[in-house]
Every structure is written in C-alpha cells, then in structure tokens.
Amino acid sequence: MGFYTELFSRPRPKEEGRYSAALALLNAMSNTDRADIGIKPADFPRIAREMAMRQG
Image (spheres, rainbow, N blue to C red):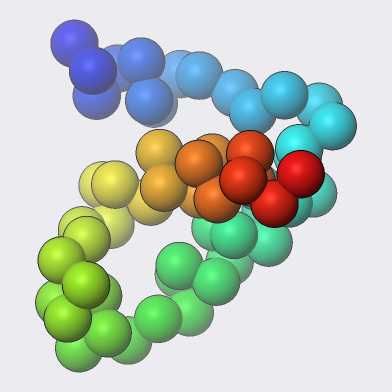
C-alpha cells in the first residue's frame, strides 16, 4: 500500500522546484553511488520529497 501512496502523492507546490532538483540529483547518481548508500530507484520519490522538505 505504501508504494501506491508514494506513486500517486504529489509534493506541495512551494517545494516543487526543490523536489525536481532533488529527483534530478538522485537520477544523476551512478549505480555504484546508489549501491554505496543503499537506495533503489523505487525509493527516489520518497527520498526526493524528504530532501525538498529539509532544504526549506
């Protein structure tokens, strides 16, 4: 159920720019970097949202 929540949830409008930047940063990482910190592409939306909220 958590996957569907992450799939269909949207960031708050004031955080949309920071969310996009965080998501781009995560997508730019190499597979080695991702493996080092232990995240998977399915976790990107949740992690990007958390990053966007922390920056503000």
